[in-house]
Structures are given as C-alpha cells and as structure tokens.
Length: 205
Image (cartoon, rainbow, N blue to C red; front, side):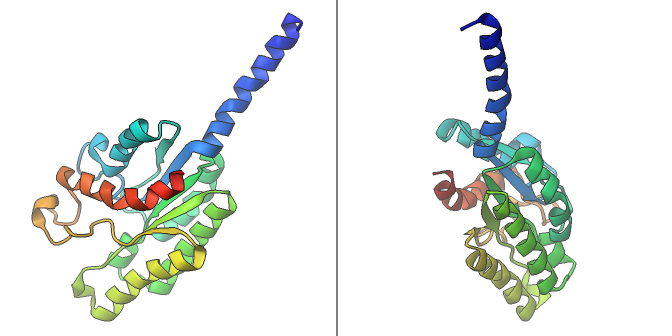
C-alpha cells in the first residue's frame, strides 16, 4: 500500500474510533446535589465511586457526570438534548425530581418532564435507568405516595430500569448526612452506589 494512502487510512481510523467508543460505552448521569457530591470531595461521591468500580469490572465504559446541585426535572429536560448529542451515551442515569418535590411542584409536572427526558434519551439510542425519589412524611400522605408512585409508573410505561430510592434504608439515620440533614455524607456514598449497581448491571451487559 502506498505510504500516502496508508497515512490517510490511519487518519480516518483515528477520527472514527473515538466517536464509536463514545456512542457505545459512555454513561451519562443527570442528577442533582445527591449525584454531584454536594458538600464532600468530588472523588468521594457515588458517581465517582461508580466510575472507579467500572474501571475494574467494565473498563470499556466511561462515566460523564452532568449533575448540578439544585437541578430540577425541568432543568434536566432542558439540558439533556445537547448532552446526548455531545456524549452519545449508551446509558443515561436519570436521577432528578427531588428538588421538584421539596418545592411542592405538582406531580403531573414532574412526571411530564421526566417522561420527556426518558423518551429523548431512548430516541437517541440510550438505555435509561430512572432513580426514584421519596418525599419526607411531612409533605402529606397523598403527595408522598403519589410522588414515589410516579417513578414506578414511568419506569413501567417506558420500560426503563428503576432504582426505587437512592437513600433506601438510611434516609432516617442522621449519621449518614451532613449537618444540614439533607445531603448524604461520605459514609453514605458507597451505600448509594450499592442501590444503583443492581439495576445498572443488566444494562451494561
């Protein structure tokens, strides 16, 4: 093969490979402060721990954390399309809705935003893992039950994987939270990862 032709071929291979890898092997995490490691070092957050775990178990995957403290389902919906175009993820972890609930937003509005995000992610070719949210009991039985049920219904309707609650089993234990009693501390982060992994692993395969 002439040298010029082989050089040109190598050039196109180099251009093609990163795009293919990104399309097949990236995980995009869309979350709020629970996923952005609020109040603790970034490397100690559950998303960073997930990345470290995947380096050992699935080294062909990378993790892109697009979580923002204070993010709502509507904000995530608005940001999602350009992130999908940029990273072309194989999997999208959608961990939003908590700030909507704390502000008492209508459940129908939260459901509409999350449904739109799920559809957009799936239309791009990504598999979706939805992370559910549960509200404190002081929001009232009707709202708290309806809010939690919305995530179950969304996962069922759109055939998405589901983590029912990221803070399951320790939400009421102060020793796992920062002094604000809202944000999980470093000790809680491995527990959060263990909530996510069982639902995520089938999508990796």
